[in-house]
Length: 401
Ligand SMILES: Cc1cc2nc3c(=O)[nH]c(=O)nc-3n(C[C@H](O)[C@H](O)[C@H](O)COP(=O)(O)OP(=O)(O)OC[C@H]3O[C@@H](n4cnc5c(N)ncnc54)[C@H](O)[C@@H]3O)c2cc1C
Image (cartoon, protein in one colour):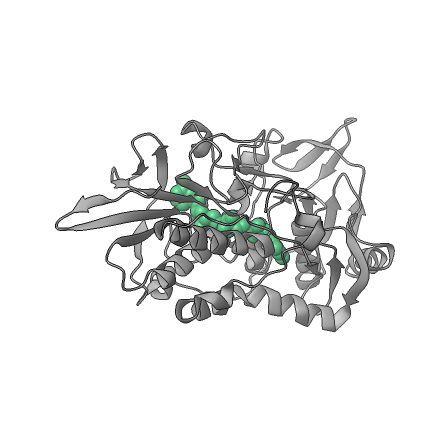
């Protein structure tokens, strides 16, 4: 059911979107484009900065490479959507208000919760104070500044997942005089099939990255990291990429969350406890036939689009449709001229098909560069953003159509 607030003489349904990341921005553009000209709907996007955080390029920013600056209010121009610059400090899901750090209070009829995720700096003592992270452009620039002042020494990258691999490769390529050590529980590319995994590991070796796996980091100190078992690895710089956590705001608001604090959604991406709240991207726990989705840009943007389409359907008195998404690739950069692209089944398990080398690097760059032009296209043609693999039998949940 949709409700409307009286504002002046018009009745307006306020949709508030929290977080202008890959998912929240997709929701805002879609919704604004699909409700353009309607006086009964007002869309407002809230984000702490006007600059879009291109997370897929943070490892490039961290090695001093210039990346483009994308301005969110400029993107929204002409769409009718409003932009509020601010940090959300609380959501009151009963009163349907959101509090901003400058004491503003924003009302909503429908909320889209897209606050994303950040590196889990609470995972191990010392990370908060002694390790660099990739939560924002500012974080990446701090690391770039530190690396620029380091003539020799050791950079320890904690976390052998995709962010750790890409970061270690990028640093080793740009700064061959530094020792780069990649520490993790699992071998790099563990989820890939044998050939692309072997390629990836050989590329790291060629770049001079020393990989140690089966490792449990238990503490980060000012000049070293401590491993379970007591070994210390000297480090001039530590980058923490292991694990993510989400904002505590959803749990504090009383929304049903999973064990990681993500908003548990129904098939249409609405909070199971508060159906006037949609959750998208990394902040949402979205169940598909293969399990709960994990945070990626490839899956995050479709969630934003789907939430917008569902809200418009609800405004028009129709039932929203279930969201379905199947993964299709895992592209991993290995510096600027090399990469591996593992194509996947919809449940993210590896197919036999993969790309390596310059062709893979070009593929990865195309993927990384694509969100912003996609948003631009969606402003004029919202349907152009509504294509993604639905995952066939992999994403079907019994009883959900
Ligand atoms: C270095 C790195 C490389 C990556 N590479 C890939 C890749 O190659 N492919 C891929 O698919 N995925 C990749 N990912 C994962 C991908 O970036 C995330 O899955 C994606 O950003 C999730 O989008 P989102 O919109 O949910 O959240 P985010 O992009 O994190 O956006 C959340 C937004 O909410 C804002 N926000 C947070 N808290 C508040 C608050 N309290 N008040 C107001 N605003 C707030 C943030 O500032 C941000 O703008 C990478 C991640 C990192 C860190």
